[in-house]
Amino acid sequence: MAMKNAHDLFAQTDQQVGELKKRIARQHEAIKQAKLRGHSTAAAETIQHTLHQSLRAFEKRRQQLFEGLEPTHEDHKR
Image (cartoon, rainbow, N blue to C red; front, side, top):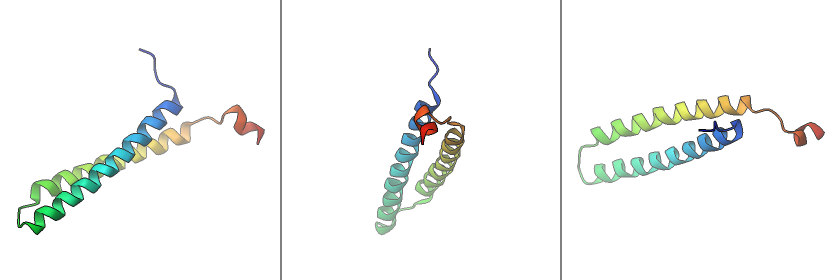
């Protein structure tokens, strides 16, 4: 299996960060609705905490990948 290049890995990680942000927003809304209905939110809040931890890890990885990207030839001409 061919290894992805750095730009592809960065793009994939960036997409994963975006998806996690969407999931966190949905989880936040689910917690809000559960509270309005008088339901326990302990499990949902644990999931939200885990999603935030994952987001931080993916954001850190994305930054590492960004810092490792080599400038392209076009960047050298500027």
